[in-house]
Image 1: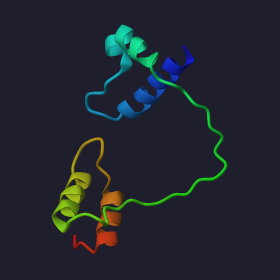
Image 2: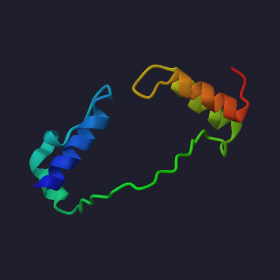
Image 3: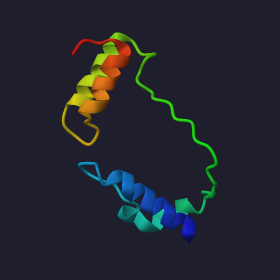
Image 4: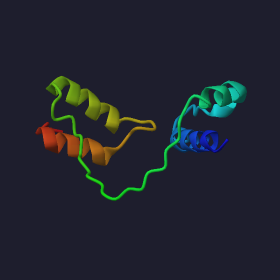
Length: 93
């Protein structure tokens, strides 16, 4: 089942960065059964518009919490991203 293979590769790709990665192999029979209810599509990208989502519509306290998490440890830490969010929201370091 090609669709299952794609789902498995995508999941493994994104989970590998996590402290406790999850995989469809944890319960392969159940995952294969659920995958039968999904539809895979192949799309040819002809144009891409990129937008930075830097939490500009969030309350200052929420922005600060997001920045603290990005500056911390773990799979989602990113000092560069935290700096950009601070810049976009005029939040002092």
